[in-house]
Image (cartoon, rainbow, N blue to C red; front, side, top):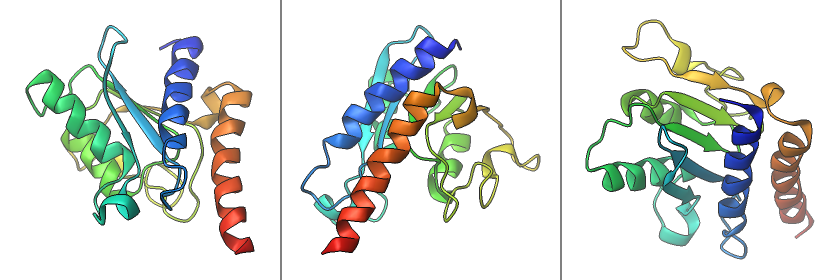
Amino acid sequence: MERARIDAALRRALEEGRRTAGSGDVPVGAVVLDASGEVVGTGRNEREAGGDPTAHAEILALRAAARHRGEWRLTGCTLAVTLEPCTMCAGAVVLARVARLVYGARDPKAGAVGSLWDVVRDPRLNHRPEVVPPDLVSPEVADECGAVLTEFFSLRRIR
């Protein structure tokens, strides 16, 4: 996947994440693209808004894409998310057979795509997606993904 398409997907995910403003949810956004590049699912964190511990951006985007496609297998699809997935979301990526995972910012405290764990590359699992980490994303897009989160958490610390 070329950098321009990766950046466009992450910018769309950033837009989705910003829609959490005022909800108290961490501004993480995700989009699922089919093999042709069409957006087939979107999601943003809604744990606080919906009182659902599983309402992470990735899970909601994967659910929307599965509904759109009419099946749970997301073969050939790309998931682009602004923050490195946690263990639950990384597991869902594997189970949904997502072809490619793109993320814009690392999560050293809970990341499960290389930072703390590496669920998606575990050879014991039956599927391993291609991973496009922040270093393969345009620096300005990766910086924006991180900046949105840094701003959110710095504002929460001030209160």
